[in-house]
Length: 112
Image (tube, rainbow, N blue to C red):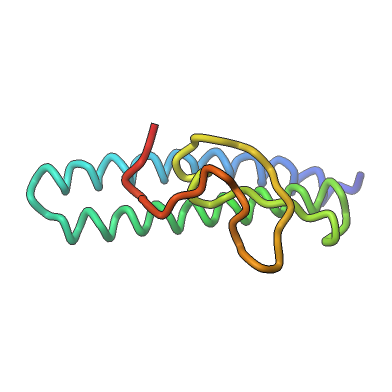
């Protein structure tokens, strides 16, 4: 394994951990904004948490591509489930729909 790939492997793991922490913190701040009577701010913070969840998805995809070396074998995590940290199931991408996860729901307020 080349030096670049070793460094990338370390970075991908670090980024995934940092993104998980940031998504969790955004969720906490969204809850606080909701309690303070700021529903629009809470909604925007939840949207930001979803974007961070999507970034985690891309990092997970990069790890799979790095490991397999093939885009044909690319796997993905449901960004919403990754944000909620309710599952870490991997599933193959379907061309008809971006989501094949049976636990997927658009209700962004559901968290464990």
